[in-house]
Image (cartoon, rainbow, N blue to C red):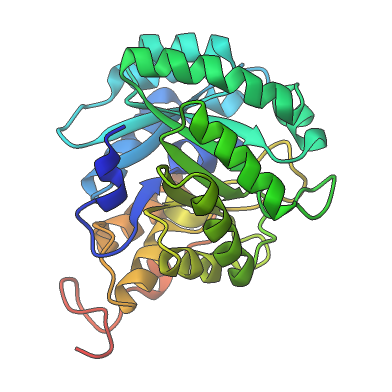
Length: 316
């Protein structure tokens, strides 16, 4: 991963599109590899330049993510677009290398109980395995993101210690993470906690690019995204349509929606580089493919104040 990610050509945080992986992994309907490629193509056409495309996990554990290699083989490779894959162990790393991903996203869960359900090992074991995976990725020229899941709270152990998360970030950065992702996996964070945690992590891992991943489970996801942008997060994760969740965390509902986040950032005078109307149309299309009404609101409400191409800021 080029460290230019920290200063991407946006007037505000960039957006990492996660619908093809974190979005689809918890949906009742499993999409085919060709349908998932169609989703990724629509995200790229809307302006996404970083897309979490696949997960290299066992298909019996997460059947929605089966066929990662086929998805990667079918993807177009336009200049400037980077595809990432979720990796949880050495076997996943082997698959990622063979599939031609630009980046890996490795997960360490902040709580042991959730870590064992999610990955079959405790937090410290997962962190120890990360060093070898990061080294392999570095040797292959693959970007290295380390996600700290349940960074704001755990469904099994309750509150998550900010100091413990900052320490995981420090160790992760020292052992090869170019980017630290703070994930509110179950949607329990609040803006003040976002500000504190980003500050604490920046102190412990000053060279790492910082990124945040929010769920809107308790309707705080967008407020948390605003706090993260204000605190200097370089990237925010979001999902077309607002779909998503973790299959191993009770009641972990959808990600913040890409189209709604783009609208919010633009009303604040920030430009994340995503076309609002195209993103909203892609979210609506995704809902039709999944057979659901997606949580995102822009596809229903439309932009303000007017037709496509007009300003979305009230002071213009």
